[in-house]
Image (cartoon, rainbow, N blue to C red; front, side, top):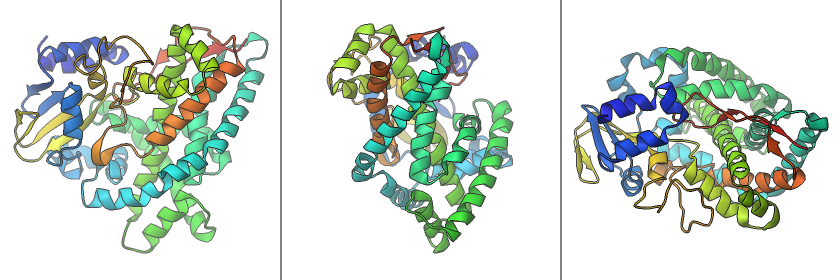
Length: 403
């Protein structure tokens, strides 16, 4: 297969189910691979790491979308995310990130540990009730999605009663994060964006009347002072925080349990060894990256690790492929939490490194050992069902029995 055929296979149904053999086919062409005019991909760990930090490569903002998909403004989901810091370059990105980062300081994340533990125990009680008598329970719907939604909602300031409908709406919205790999499904994301934008509009008005000690109040004040955030930027960043804050962690928790079932010795260590969860979570992130790829935009002619890249080229950085680069990780297809110096690319690097990464890691480090200790006989009731996506790789459904 030539590189263009491999990339086409990645976004096809079979490729979305198991992309890893296709990453290796791309790697055979080199760590940085020109695919066709206007598209280059990187699959090497070092090359991706450098590209993520290269200020010559920009995220695909509105101007980038104008170049590759002029009709993008007809989709409210693409407009909404493009108003967030995810698709902004300096100086706008720097200013917005500084505003939002106050909610993810090490002290604030550490201060949430007891709250996260309480949320976990409450969800474990719920699993026990739902799984009484050996009844199969969907671990994704009832735990792996509920926990990160509860955590990010508490951080933003979303009322608990409103969280129950977020999972499906937010999941639908993240179709837009796949970019234009599947334009036909963007109407689903548009509907979700419109629904959530209306909801956040009401919540913003409520915070103006009733300020609170939460991120939403801080962002509303940044908007209302008239200099730091427009209304569209305020709503776009709230959308980003909600969807990125829950889906990546949900995927991490799903893969973390699946791999524990596949490696019972590691599950036993999670139950018995304090501190082992840190190494385990890092290896889960390397082995099954929740976000498989991100992209950059070369506005003018440049190079990626010495490979010439013409101006107007999209550069897809295949994070999951980098995480299995044998030059960086010997025997990369082996799941090994004792692997030294892991440092996965899963949360990115450089100016756009995921702000919520420490919070996501903390949730997984707390949740997985507590889950396995609470239910020592926990087992899969049937094989897990992966979502039909490529960029956001996670489990859609995973039936388990607790006893």
